[in-house]
Image (cartoon, rainbow, N blue to C red):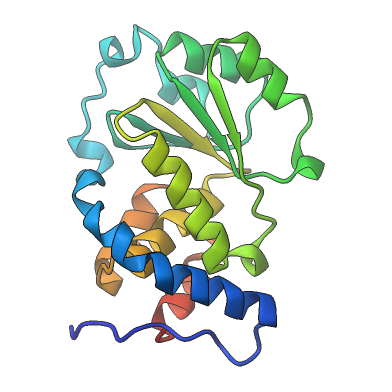
Length: 203
């Protein structure tokens, strides 16, 4: 597969998207210098599933869906008080929530704080908000908390996987197959074609 050419935004996107593109282009070099910090992504079968890794908490039973691309990364669906408590017991330090407020059934920020974890909220309301500025913000959060044990979620893990794939392709320069596989390992399902199409558009 040939290397991807620099991305340009589709004609149908707004002037705001053009601003997103400018920001992404100006920060691409800086992002590339830290690409070695990403860490490798392993398949679920490669990850140590011993509950001792999570202080004896069996997260695979508690969280649905549940993706474990590496020992320090957990991807799941929507949370509630019980799941927040389980993640805290499992040693999670950061919760990253991609659901908008109108999808939340409880005060997640307060629950995470009570459990002693740090909370990051970056709402992505469907495919329309999978824009470069959002992915840059997502990348910034992950870089700030590099090497910490993180749980990321949306309603099903699908938006998390989409954001991970776009981050890999747009900001890390990964080839299509690599970016898509990275997304799938983090929960990408129904948005797979949308993400594929966005990665195809040169910028």
